[in-house]
Structure formats: C-alpha cells, structure tokens
Image (cartoon, rainbow, N blue to C red; front, side):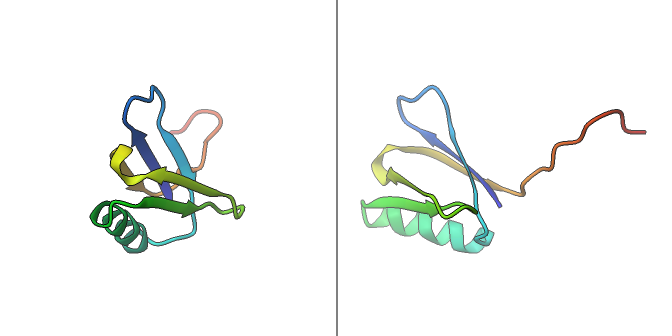
Length: 73
C-alpha cells in the first residue's frame, strides 16, 4: 500500500510503501490525531517514519503503482 503524507510547512510530501491494509493505516492516522501523538508507519523494508500528528496536512492512502516502461496499446 502506498501512503502519501503531506506535512504542514514542507514543500514535499512523504511517500511510504507499507504492507499494512487500508483500514489499519486509517486507524493509525485516526488514533494519532485523536491522541495528539505521532503517526508511526513502517515500510516494506522495516524502516519507520514518524510524523507529529499536529503537523499532518493530509494522508493519501492508495495502491502502489508498478512503473511501466514503453508504450501501451
């Protein structure tokens, strides 16, 4: 699952590829915002991304897209 996180006052968004389900990610985001804590996501390589919940601008949850090379018909 690909998660794009917008951070307030940051020019670029964070992108995390994770094995979590959409529902699990949504629950983590909701709990972080409600608890005024931090959002912690672990990517497919085991690396963690930590973002303060009060600095979240948006969280976009979608499927990972595999890059394609060449022309499609």
